[in-house]
Image (cartoon, rainbow, N blue to C red):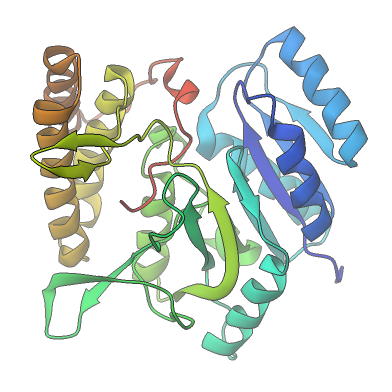
Length: 318
């Protein structure tokens, strides 16, 4: 079995600072696969040059296939090379030194007899570096309730983690059938984690595995004397998020009711932020309504809007 820990980065119209992040990732993991969904000749040439300078391998998709399909392609390549573990990154994330060591140590500690499905990083939003990430898990008093806790120490039984900075066990990924490509972008990581939990696998968070992560278009807004951080997602992205949430309710509601309770509250939080803090309210609220209806009423999963990937690759856990 190869001793190195490989990883993949999914890109879609990355910003000019991608090469800096690629170099930081390449110092932590090897080999590095960059799976690009841009399907743009000029961008492909720039990515190829950056990958060559950083020692990364570039895989080009002919169209924007979404985060799930890109992850499946990358993990499949690494699986064929004989790797057991792999780390996934968003194009807007930067690992701190020691990230892989922290992830592997946590994986060995929390489940020595059976490898965990995923071990997530202890990430920080670059816009709010003093605000620790909070991780969802069932409330110990009632399975209908949830709690969200920081990773001051390793966590060994969280509900879900974001893809970026997470260590995946590839045999488990294969056994679960990979990521659901019909979800395209939002909640891909959540669905994977919920399916893993229902199959009896553990999901952890490594307190020492630190990741700097950009939370998309979030920015500070002053309102009623306080500072708020609305998401500012465009309507196509909101449609996709609310559609996928409705799909996942149909799939996971009864098995993980505490997660459903969190998502309902989080959904109302997004709606309130749009109503009171964001612009383009009518279009955004309409997209949320249409997406929810599509997820509730549709039996067939249709192709998503081709430009949703231009916004941040993951919302994570707010």
